[in-house]
Every structure is written in C-alpha cells, then in structure tokens.
Image (cartoon, rainbow, N blue to C red; front, side, top):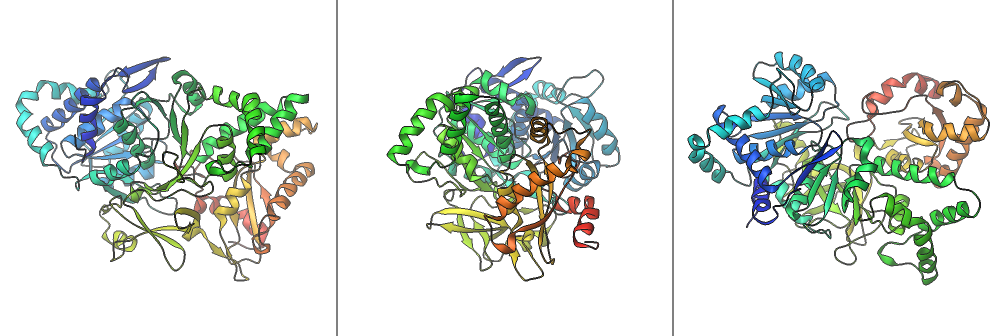
Length: 592
C-alpha cells in the first residue's frame, strides 16, 4: 500500500507486519506486548472517542510522558481525525509548560503519572481552554486516557461515516504535530510538521539493514523529533519496538531483548564507553595489556574497511579476546547504532566499528523532521567517520558564504506556529531553511558539521573560535564530563569544566588522595595539576588562538533537572553564563 500519512504506517502494520510484539513495554518487571491488531484498535477507538468529545480537525492535544505503547495509540488516533499532537518533555520547568500549553492551544493534556498530573493540573487551571488532564498510568479518581478509548468503542457506529470522511480527507501537507524546540537560546518555538515532512524523512532513511524480525530498543524521548521519526521508521520496516523502563535499565533491557539496533545521543554512548573502560581498568597483567592495546588499535580504525592487512590481522585477534565481550554485553544481536542530537566523537565511532558494532552518525533539526544527512552501510561508500554522512534522498544542501548550512527539501517544516516573523527569518525567499549550523561538504558528498553559527565567537584579537569543536574534543578526556569554552571579545580562551566525578573519585583513591566532598577535591593541587595536563594535551592539537589559557573546575554535575543541559543534553549557555558569572568575573577581571 502507498504510505503518504503517518497513520498509513499503522494500516501497513496491520496488513503486513502484524505480530504479537509490534510494541512492548515493561510493567512490574515483565514485558507487556501489543500486537498490530491491538495497536490499530486502540488508536481507532481513541480517534472515535475524540470525535464524540467534539474534537475537530486542527484541534490540539498535548502529551507529557515517558516512552510507552500508549503514546503511539494516542498519536495515531489523533492523526486519523486530523487532531494535532503536541508532545512535550516531561522534565522541563513550570514556566516552559505554561508557555507551551498556552501557546499551542491544547484542549486536553495527557501525562504519564500522578506526579505530573498533580503538577500539570495546577498549570492547566490557569489556561482557560484546557478542558481536562488525563494520565496514562491508572489511579483511582484520576481521569485515565482509556476513558476516551472506551467512549470511542461505544460510539463506533455513530461516527463511522464521519471518521472515514475525515480520515480520507487528510492531506500529506496537513500539520500532524507541533514540536516545541528545547529553547537553549530563548523561548521555545512551535515547529509545525506535516505528514509529508515525516513520511519523506522515513522513506529517505530506508538505508539500514533491518527486517520485520528485528527488535529495537527505544529510550530517547518520543517527544523529540529524532526518536519520533525513527519510531515511525522502525514501524515502517515492521520491526518490534521495545520501550526501555528508564535510562538506568538500558543495559539490562538491551540484553533482555537482544536488540538489533537503537538510536542514541552521544552522551549515552560516552557513558557506555566509560563503563567499559572502567571494567577494563580493573584488569591486571596480560589481560590489562590486551585490553589497552585493543583500545589503541580500535581508535585507529579506518572507515569503509580501508585498513591494512596487518591491522586486520591484529583486529581479528582483539575481536576474539576483547570486543566479543562488548557485543555480548550489548545483547549479541546488535547490527548497528545511530547517533544524533549532538556531535559524536570520531574516536568513539572508530572504536565501536572496530568492535564490530557500527556506530553511525546523522544530523538534522526539529525544523527538518529531522534528518538532513546520515551515514549508513546498506550501500557501499556511504560512510565517512567524522562526518554526518551523505544527504538524505531528495534533500538539498547549500553552504552559504559564511559557512552556514542551508537546506531545501520535503523534510523542511511548514513554519513556526503563530510566528510568521520567525518563519520568514529562517526560510528565505528561495525556500532555503537556514540551520544556524556551520559546515562543509567533504569529497563533494559527505556533510561535516563544525559548529553552531550563533555560538562562534571572536576574541579581542579578531580570531574566530568555534567552541563546540573544542568542547567535543575535550570531552574525550575521562576526567571531563562537560565543558564550556568562553572568551568572546576577550584576549584569550578559557574553560569552565564539570569533572567526571565518578572517574575522578577512582583516580583520587588510587593516588591515596583524601577529600571530604567535591568542592575540596577540585581545589587540591594534585587535581589541578592533572587537569592542566589534560588541557596541555588538547592545546597541542589546536591552533594557538584556540588554546585554553585558563580553566576553572566546578563542583557541580550538569544535568537537565538543574538547568545546565537542555532535554537533548546540549549546553544551555545562557544559564551557565549566569550561574558561573562569578567565575568569569574572576578569570577576566570584570563582569561578563
């Protein structure tokens, strides 16, 4: 069948890929599975229920939830009757919820649990057009999403003709979702994405070796455009999708499900890598030597198999002794991993490839639904480590005079909701979307991202510095969890570093260094000296004008809940500048 709208994927599942575990999630330690029939029936019942409640084409419903099969039920149910889905992160602040819910015109809100229900019920009372808040989890005396589906089940005959009429009338160019950007530099904007935006992206990403027999683990938030699109992609393939219990259970879930693939952001992969390194450091003697040598070899892996015969002989040896254990720890069936959302360290990609686990990087934005380019192995010569890969099918890219990446194609958004000025500022009169990212084409085929246009700054000496590339390189250090490069209009570049305290504690213990807390630890001369060694090494890899001449360690771990990172784990620079204003003043001698 022809797939032109998101819910056509569901129809295709029902007709061609129906099985006992099209979708699955854990409940009380057990995987609860839903067949294609279950999925289709729940979605359709929900759609009928919305019609009975008086929902019309173009109305909005917001969801604030963890990943779960029910998210799909309501997503497809909304799409079938033209209701626009507004998915929102479950870990943002009340002010952000207030803004998004008021701006989006959502009529109802569906949240995952009681804590979110209590929180959102208070916010919803302040927004006149929000009619009700529901939960996905069941609680007594709390409105449950299934009430809408149960209502729909009882009115199928009543709304049968209306349902068919609306469903058939929906155009691929109709808006199916409004996704609010994470707002790292200001108020979040609502990105209007159409059925065609998503479906064109799905079809252009049919470049992975997947079959309906494959199982996928999903753990990035479905409210994020990256996971949303690949969620559709895996369903298009007919794969089984298992939703991880939480981020802490990923490793166990991967082993339990024996997954074929998953998508991730670099920070999660860095954490997996750090755990592997930590276990390797516990080895002694010959085993430790073998482990160390395997890492050295792996980090010099050449993509597309362009390794010497001698390299391949040694790699085969290390794959048997070391890397086979990596694959076993990742379930033993893993075909590939796709990384997106932020820059991936090339060293990490090489290492995973050497281990026999292809780690392929892609690139895109919410406004491009999201994929612009992606590395893949399905056809020869479509992978280059250190780039984000060749362009997706039917997507055009032009590098502007200042290095900015401009994009044109069926994946580009319809515009920003209620913000014509912002839409006109981002999509020029020729139809090119201005990404705000700086990049270049390598060998005329592979796209390489170098930095964010807005984040590049100039020192007082007139030298331009791209902070992201320096930060990405410095995070290769096991001592550094996060780092922010600063120095706009200053004489020199500096760094504010959030240490990897887990590793730093181990290092201090091995060095017999005593400390009471992180604040005392980062002030010790031995610790400062070690970090200076790390800085000196990275300085040796960069131009003189990029050298970090001063750095300060902070006792805080940066995360989403405390505001230093966005929901997609990017630095919130404005927040960090405000938080560490006293450090910047001390480094440069005055208020920044």
